Image 1 (tube, rainbow, N blue to C red):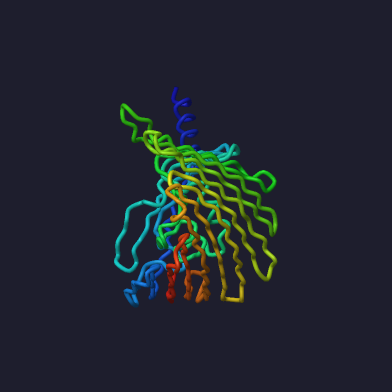
Image 2: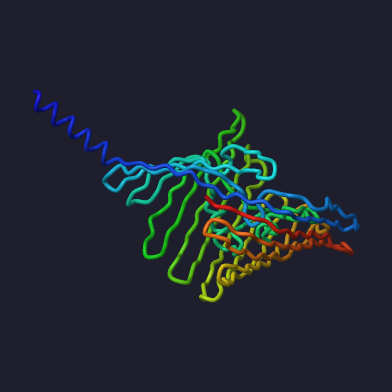
Length: 339
């Protein structure tokens, strides 16, 4: 009996040693001095002057991620990540990512608040990493409200979601996400979200496709659908990117494209993006319009973890029938640190 108990204790001890875990604290903090000016179609200008904002070259965030080796090729993983306002010291909670996952030879199954497959495809095709100042980001989501144009934007992340991601299979991988919604009343359907993506990465070539469908609560309003197809090609001296997007929803439909490139120059990196999106609104031709513009930045590495940067962007929005356009300009300089 004693020998049996000793053997069991030894097996438990071996299991405890083999199940190793690690937790990493990480972050990306940046701030920049910027001028952001908007002029509407009537010529009225909003210009708050020079301001210090968080982010710049990329949004600021802080997070924790961990992994535990369960043995037999299985791993348990988690991630908690939230936005940080470096300019004001604010923290919004884990509003970017909050999920747990099981990973193995079959792929990865994750649950919680996580980036959608659609968002991941968007970001992979943007030379500026889908930063808030990027033309790719601002045009497709019409974040500056130029003429009220825009019928479909990126969902970014989705709460209460389940996602399956395949392992890499000869350069191919994919994801499927489903979020059942948790807002149903006794007399209505809950909101739902589904998305799929397919990626191919092999050497200098990357191709990314994703599609999504969002059903609003009650199922009365028309579903919102979106599709993105794009990729990158690394020429060595420069990396070129391309994106084609379409969307439709309750307010109409839109389609657009984006092109860009990134050029490494020793410790510096120059990036440029141009995007254009045309909307046909369900509320009438007078609301149809086009948003287009460019963004550019130069980053200079002071070390492996710190860089300084200069950013600039200019957008225009033109509504059908209007005699003039609304405009947005931004330029700034800042510093960013990784840890």
